[in-house]
Image (cartoon, rainbow over all chains, first blue to last red; front, side):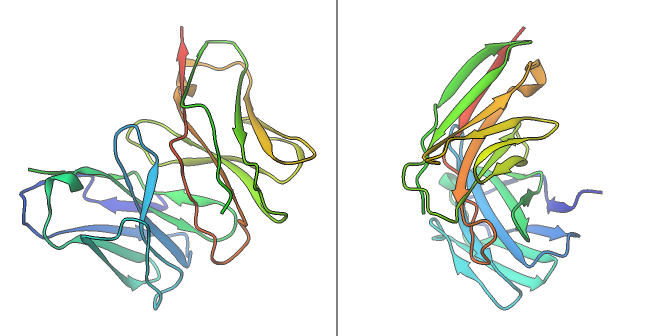
Length: 110
Length: 112
């Protein structure tokens, strides 16, 4: 089983719909991150959390929200999806010098 | 946060050694240099990390000159499966508030 699991792996949704992307980890790490990747671009930080009671905005948080339900779970929500939120989304964890990434969620907003 | 600059793309052939250089002129004293590899539609994967001189593991080598203003990731005898995007990150990795920050990376294509 993967250390960092993202669900769903693929999702197509309509403009205006609310959607949640989920991330769970078995590594016991406190620090969790959500990134977005667009074709040909690097990963851009959406939100991050250093522990259960800590939530911080990244460089592109507008239109997104997160919830840290437990140490192991960090969910990303799009309250009202729009087409330019079509992208590949990654969750990551870190404790120490190395970050561990999930397999990604490919989201298409039509 | 130290800014990094690396080539957008590189091409190589199977069996060759590939060197990808990253510039980080304003690296801080306690910053480490970390490289990640990303295959299409997968999350980045840690390859190697170093502070100074040379680090080698089973995947790659990392060369860091004395002034630490650049670093070179060396992949020996690449194969088709090394086709990926390679990211250079610089930061205080041991710090609690460290956030892995990714640029556009270097897209390496290995040809038969």
